[in-house]
Image (cartoon, rainbow over all chains, first blue to last red; front, side, top):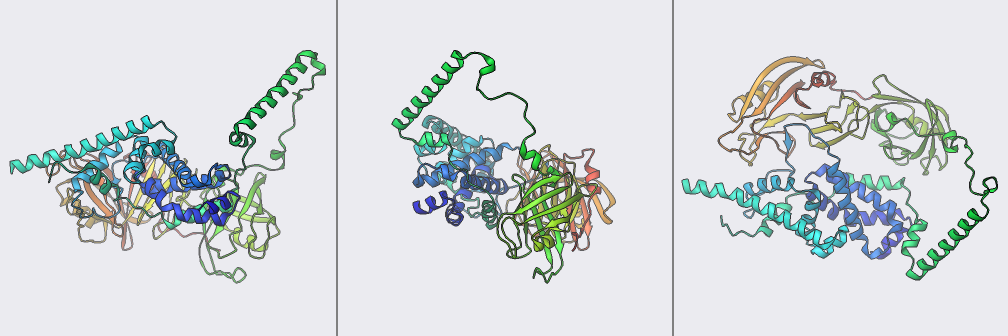
Length: 182
Length: 395
């Protein structure tokens, strides 16, 4: 990997293509989860990879390529989220293609509750939540990766987790209530 | 359902719902952009940041010494006429501008055309495109065939002319080949006609010299153009602004920074139950009347103000479809509306919200249009500008 990164740093487009193929799925997965929009995620992926190509000669440690490009991606997600594209008024498309899976772990109510609560988070809080829960990065690494203090990463994760947990619990309440009434 | 559910597992299951495979088109777009994007070489400052600490100290000391000498010279030889600092005499216009400049912003777009079979290019008939970069100075053709992309820098050389310089060897042409083209835009700026003035790469001339239609599915600052992501292509005129689009199967949304947006659905198919995420669909029946009837039969929705009109020569129904406020079966929840027939997606509306919907019948197909802001003064103008099907310029 290091050798490929070094070739790309010297302007080898073929080597960069290998890096794109090796990392783009993971990056796209992060972007779709932060932005909850496949089109915005695609834009963020493209802009961060093109920035990566342009800035690659400035990368200090070739072994840190993936962390570096992940940081570019998260910042591209911030930019996409703030472009404030205003999609048409009342009709909205849900972010997930296809019907909800029949997963016992995740009820339809959970899914809707999480969708709604997640949209109330700032994009910075979303990023920390996704990097922690989906990628599995420890907080210290998230902080380092995003260039923020560890305390800030911790408080963002705490706030996001609390809000999403409350959303699920609030959603659960009327179901139990209805059950009792029945 | 247990109340002691594991939040982490639920969160992970929910996060796993989103797609994880980067679309091939996104990767292809990156690799294409990289072909014409130069890398930034490390600057002095980067080198400085990367230098070992002792080297940095030495550099800082050296810089301070230079500054001190300069300051001494300035103070000691204080007579203004003898200063050796840079002259402040007015300069001429920058040479870059004298030699040429940036293209008109209205040219920066993706342009579409339809090429006939051409033996000299050895290409078949089909849609082709020309991208004049939104963020750079490059033009590149697509879909003519291998070697016929002719990526070139573009520089304005006169009010209605630009020069192209090939940046990569193409079929029968070489890096540095130059050409000059005269351009003209149609009155609504939806079409661009390129005419060769000079050209050292004859095949590039065959590729470029034609009339092109502005694509609204690429970045553009002009709102009049063609959408080719649905079948058939259609043309529409939106107010001038910077636009971005998103597409799903048989769905496109074109939205401006100012908040004007057009959503187009092909063959919308209602859901049976507005409260259910099972997304069972009403059996598809073609035509606007069948679509409206399905909503009239659904007590989750209000259907009002049906009006029959003609848009682009096609029978059209204008109807307001809204989610009932405080719908008792699923209070507070968004209501499931419809999906394009060929799309595995689902559109929802909030309870109490209404959309102004135009159903345009084009042969066997129904195209549904929604303009945002809802019921704005410009809504009917946008709808009336629809031309479907739209034939791309042919050469």
